[in-house]
Image (cartoon, rainbow, N blue to C red; front, top):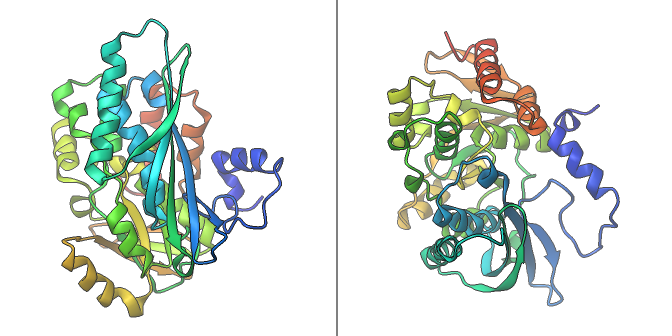
Length: 352
């Protein structure tokens, strides 16, 4: 079994993909890109297409405000476009609601979708409505990428610098607060408004060797990139710099270790990307001009695997497979999830 196939989610996707013929005009293979990249007839651009559904988060109670549900439905698909550096054309949506839902619930979802579109200057082109036993919201986004500037998850090389587009951890802070039934004020749902990094993605596309969004959490994103590229990442685990300020405040208030906010599966829509060493200065200069200040996480190294450089200076190689598969199994109680995370952190010396 290959390292990539150790992950249950990867195996599940492959089980579906093996049934379908791959077209000649599709640029990426399964897992290689956040959005599907398709050759256009004019030869000058690629069509980027992606689809994402918000359902499980609603069923589990992570999202209770219909505005959040609508906002995330739009941003999830647009974030996949950002990760390939696409300029968006627009979205189509599919909305399935319980037949007894009040009109205010529907309107709240629509208002969230509309606000997300306004925030990024994108439009909903149309869609479909249905009834169902549980709320399910799907967004399908389309965009264009210059053919000579394709950006995928694969392509990084040793000595490339690893960057993060902004502070991470808000998704896991919200998820843990909701699942553990902590008081709302510990991390209000209204503070979770992750925005797709569309403009930043278009800049990153011009310099980066690989890119992926953090919708599944920071460490899982890094782990997936390592497995896809058959290389290693050495990451400085300065959580006070890597995590968003309100996430650090949440950890301080609850006593939850900061690394925990990077290790869960409910992320946000930041971008992890790699820049070749000879392009770093030019990239940072261009980023500064648009008031974009990415966080430098570390570097790509030859030895395969994910290594964290702890604040003490100690280096620890970590393997995310057990945590990723625990979440993918979907049959664990919150208590077991917390116990498994703490045991995992101790194993890799992230906890005293």
